[in-house]
Length: 168
Image (tube, rainbow, N blue to C red; front, side, top):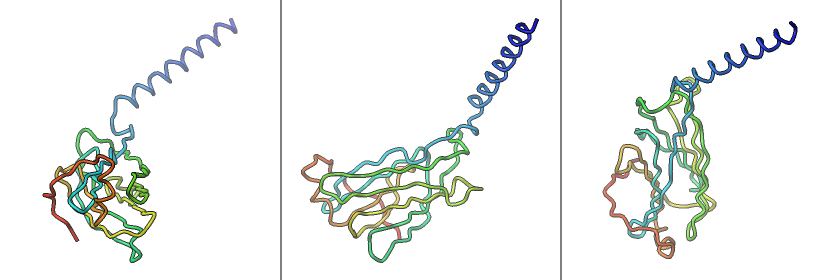
């Protein structure tokens, strides 16, 4: 009889665990999603352009740059869609492309209460002149590295005509 009770208890625990797992999978708001999806590099005449692609549409807010030119904070808001979760996780990417200084990009929420308000913390290994602009698609922002395009010409990085607008 004692062995039967243990078997029934294990069966109940397994059923509860399966139910909890089903709840987590069924509700997208419980799952987490990564916001910064990809970083691509393009050459735009004399400039290098890092195209920051997000998993949902974004609205550029502002940028705050260090005077030294080695750090910029880019503030943006994720436009909520049915495909994106309320639990957005941060991310860290390193761009270590030949011909460019190393760039570390960290994505994080600005406010824990509102995970859609976010910022990118961009650190350059050496000071650079740059600007931030809205990308050609709603899911992109572009980090333009002024005068750095020549370093990309050997790497087979594609040339792209610039139609995006630079923002303050």
